Image (cartoon, rainbow, N blue to C red; front, side, top):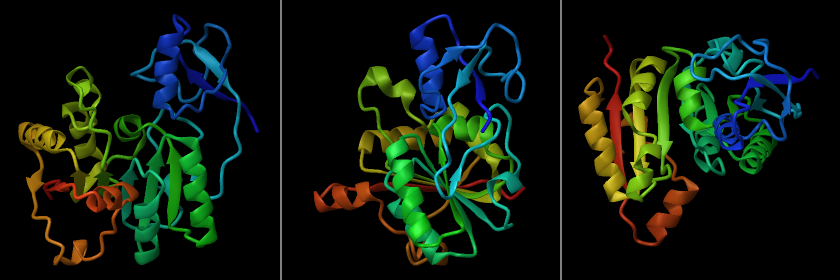
Length: 258
C-alpha cells in the first residue's frame, strides 16, 4: 500500500497536532518529506502546509478511507449502490447507525467517528450483521462536513449528543456554528434534514439561536408519530441520560426544497 501524504505544519508541534486531530489522528508519528507542494489533491484551501508522510493503516471491513483527504468526494466513492444517504456525525459506539442500517436496508448510512477504537468496534459489528449499507469514516466531524462530503448528497444528517463544551472559553469548539451550518446547507439535498439532540439545555439554546441566525433552514416538528421518525433508536448516551432522568432536547430542521 502506498504512503499517504498530508500537509501538516512543521512550524510547531501544537499546530501539527491540531491538523492531525482534524483528520482523526490518522497521521500517527509523522516524518518530514520536504518543502514542496506534492501530495494528495494539491494544496488544500484550509491547510497551506508542507507535506508529511503518514504511515498507512489497513482498512477495517466496511471502513471508508478516502484516497485523498484534500478534495471533496464524489457520491460513488461513498457507496457503489445509489440510495438516499444519511450521516451519523459522531457515531460513538454505533448503536444508532447500526440499528438504522438494519431497519432501513434501502438507505445508505455513513457513520463518522474520530476515535479508532470506536471505528473498529462499529466496523466489526456491521460486518457481523452483514450490513452492506453502512460504512464508517474515521475523521473529525467538522472537517467531514466542510471539506469532504459531496454537495447535495445527504438526505439526513444526525448530530446526536455532541460534546457541549460547557465552559465559556470552549464555546468556539462547539460544532453548531455559522460556518458549519453554511457547509451543512451545501451537502444536504433540497428538502434534506438536520436532526439534533442534546441533554445540555444551554447548548440546545445555543444551537437554536445559531440556527435562527443562519436562517436558511425550516423548522419541522419532532413528532415520533410521523413516518420518518416512527423508528428513531436511542444512542448509547441517550439511554444513559434518560436512565438518569435527564431531559433530552431535540431540533429538526429542513433544507428548503428550492
